[in-house]
Amino acid sequence: MREMPAKKPTPSFEEAMARLEEIVAAMERGETPLEQSLALFAEGTELLKRCTALLDKAEQQVSKFTAGPDGEPVEVPFQAP
Image 1: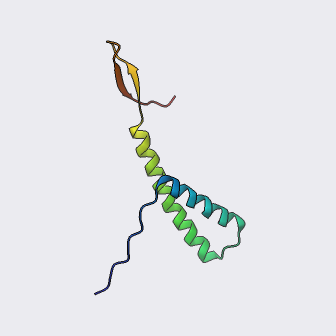
Image 2 (image 1 turned 120 degrees about the vertical axis):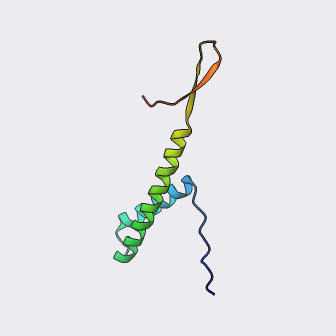
Image 3 (image 1 turned 180 degrees about the vertical axis):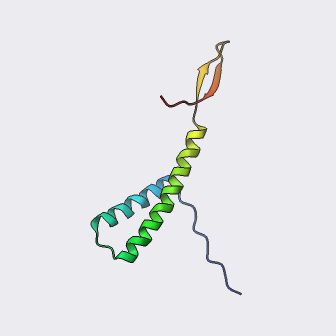
């Protein structure tokens, strides 16, 4: 029976952004072979999806408090200007 490879832990937003910066820097230098550049591009695409999903989730959670009719704080969804 073959063992399943260990699953990589899902990176945090900060970890994903740091890795994306590394990938961009490596690709901008233009020193990576084509196959490695393609692999880096694919990895970067996945990291970008992860970061976008985390930002979308954070945006959904952001709310603000305003004073209600009785003066008590009321939570309302955050609306970007």
